[in-house]
Length: 563
Image (tube, rainbow, N blue to C red; front, top):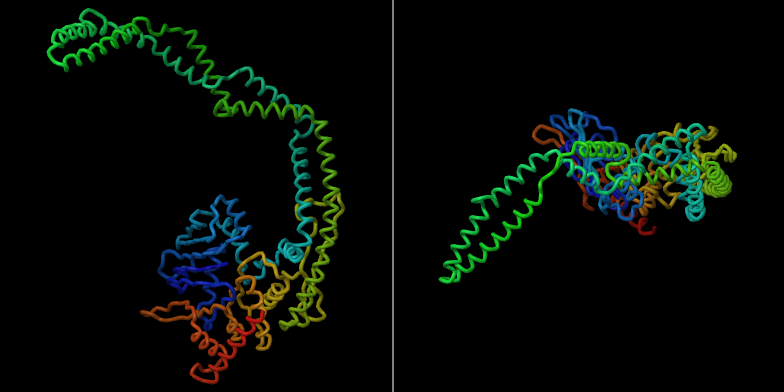
């Protein structure tokens, strides 16, 4: 559900915050007040193409921020997981567009592309504006709608299809990954054999490279090490060296240690230093440094070069190289036993194909049965909405032969909504012929006919195009029915629809400091009466007109309570 929409620097709106509620949200206002700007701002934050002409004059950028309540929305959760975005109960979408053509989009603070945004918002909001954008006019969504209408009957069957399709896909992938034709397999075997032998012959040990690098460093600095050890030894144990000095110092301190406890303590400390120094000297004397060996250095260089080459080819460390080795061995065995494995996978494919085809036939039967009842229900609703001559049907393609079928998790049905608005005219694909005024009423009929909804917010623009007063009352009731299950946002000029609102929003223009601005205001009950009086065409100061508006609201409230 859409909780709020914040708009900044779009057309004549400097800054506005619109709070929406569950149920029916009605936006009204005089012609030219800026109602379309609100829809443009909503489309913008949902991912529509940005245009710098939408930026308010003199401003460097425009922005919109939408907040959605997405609790228990599995579709949103799945998409956010695909986008590596943490799921939260409130989803926040921010979008900015600058006059120089730059822009940025964030979902819950995470930068995303316009394509990612549209993928997400497609399951949140359906804006009815241009027919090619209608969610339910896309053939893939039409099939989904039919499935929604018979979800209980299809649920177990779809689970069986998914399980069998997973087996089918697993066998198909395994068959494709066996190694290709005979020549390709032979080439692959040679490559794998070489790689396996190269790694095994190298016999790499964990930590070997680090040890070689240490040894190499010692050999390269052998002369320097030997000289340093020799000089250090002389400094400690030579004539007049540190050991002689320590012995003399210790002798002097012992001559006075009986005079005070602190001198005795100093003797102990100095004696410890003398012992440690003697131990260091013994170690230095027994270590003659590194004896340089060109042969050993060459061997180390050769080994290090081999390890470097293996790391470049097979993995950045011993663990990765060994993993590559095990995977190569497994693939080698798989290709070596191609004939047996190929036969096994082919048998699984045929078994899965037969099972899936049987399920597809059953699914198609359920869908056709549902489609018939659904189309009849929609035609009935259309008649009540003033389209008594309209006809509607759902066309199904024949199920292909098993050899020609494209196996999927969703069966093999292709459907198309067929429609005619007038008597005597043949039905044609609805997406190609339905008008803007007809599509809004058709969508109302469909939403009323189907009680389950995949999208939680529907936006209707131009819903009252060509509707008379009598039909307007019916449309208003349809809105009320739909709004019991989903959130509805609608722009209207009709008082009957406005009276049915759970949340009334007025869009108006006002001049300030010589400049015209668009404002959005949530109406109180008293202000709602005044707005409906205006929509009726009466004078808001007229007691009769005001009383009529109050009666319309009372009748609308009574109807909603009866649902």
